[in-house]
Image (cartoon, rainbow, N blue to C red; front, side, top):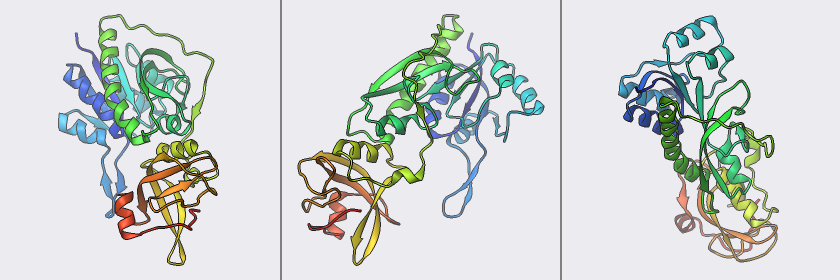
Length: 310
């Protein structure tokens, strides 16, 4: 028998899992997502990607501001779900909600737990120089990503990967993993393993203050910092142009040969010296402009040494 599920998710990362659960015949009786927010130039209310998909599928959508009231708990319980599937929902689930479905609530988390529990596991894995990441299905408890793990899928992180690249690689893998986990749950064969107490790290939400670039770091650390913050909020530096400091976001780069003072432009191809080694800028964005490839940027703003990125 297909499972009767509540789906809880908000951003684009959660959409493939919702679609796969429906495609595999599970009955998604309700979708919980964050309420629409003003966005764009007109600040019009923008529904979450999950809400847009749920409406297209004809699934009832709920956007409560809290799950901690008796009314919210009663509404959730009334769906009589076998399980809840949670993917980047963005709200803490209180114990009565966790306990309401027959088999509990199952979270898809974008890291290899217990490494990178918390809000920004994809960004943190790239920024830290990790060799691999992955997705895990976990039966939720009251802790922060501390629940028992059911299944995992690993993925190598290369130096050319941005946070966006890793996000896009993990989302479909996560959807497949959750479908397999719910299939095993349906058959009564889902096995759970306690997380290790060793290697626990926390993926704190990205603070915009972290985005300022530090050219004194080794080249690979600078590269991973740039890629871990790409495309949002975007690692940035300042460049002296026409007598003023212009803010520049660096979205993609590669390791390059060369040495010099940190932040020093080494050639006319946007090779910049770091504390040890150098990187070549590949994609960048001037304040108020669209992202562009380095070659296009140089066509409009030719740069040559001596020049220093701040």
